[in-house]
Length: 512
Image (cartoon, rainbow, N blue to C red; front, side, top):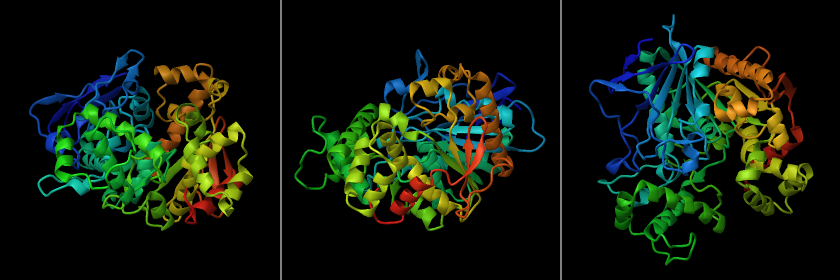
């Protein structure tokens, strides 16, 4: 591969690295979302002259500082100017264009960055002979506020900016990736957690049609969405908090709409740091005021980008008919029981179901013990709605369902088990990073086998939509699920009793 590559915006210079690889980091795929572009749909990237040396990741979007660690002692710079992507490729000229894998990071639509060490695409690109692209997008108040009530023709605001950013990045890939040796006609979008949720949203987004030919959703939360009417209520509270930093989230107000001119002035003048800090207060607001959601900043349902929720689209059979790998980790909820307690939201939902058939069904399969409470929280957000999404999407395209069970000795001893995000260790194979290397230290051979297997399955799917002859496509007739472990196996309808409970709940109008 040539180090210098021509993109539509200008020449970019890459850096050759370990293991015969080459990487271009920090390529802008859209104009900086600053000034008049703040709270706007992504605009075309600026042009530049000469060679732009792309040897460092772009800035992360504003979030808590400790979340931007790239080593135990180094932080990634933060800025609203964050719409960049990174390309990882084997350092050789391919005999044919390589499959492309575009990764969307997680973080609950509140945090995350492509510079996180475990997302280094070098190992996956080299081992599977693919081109890996990792992207950044706006999240939190920068990406998921509905400010359309305060717009004018001269100062428009769009919704679902985070999803629009992802679509813009995929469009950049379609137009430019051939210059990096990638095949624009063979693009697999994959993501984890909020990234996996984004994948399910893109499968339901009309504007994403034709931008990818395969999808992998790891630990998605397909119901992590906000209805547009609720999003406008949240935006109004955000403006009150921005206007009055001493305001207690959810405090009574005079009931009048927030003045539109004042809103536009605040949104233009506030610093990025202030917008981030104000967005954090919305979490308290969602806990104090029953607005129907516990995460107030997430994909918005009801606009042109997401006319209906991913789950609604799947159940209606209108998701894009694209082959899909989708699954969850066995103990998704264990991570959250330690660091982000979902119990209040879950208990609120269960309380609403008290005395109903749904409430009785939940109590029949989940006990009051700590382990079951953690499992209920994970199933509530991740596995339950995913199992419903799988049923719907499998009717329109080949769908491969998995459950990730693999646990290292350290994860088992810590009590986390196969919890949320642990499959990232296998997908990217970044065993030389300080976190992944620590988790694998007592199980090096086993982890190496697992990395080879998972990357082989993901790479095979990206190449020719086949994750392995031993992995049958899921149907509602036999419900065969790949249990990823050392060794892996196929089970028919594992945890059928719990699945049936969530199927019944999500097929009704019952909240949750």
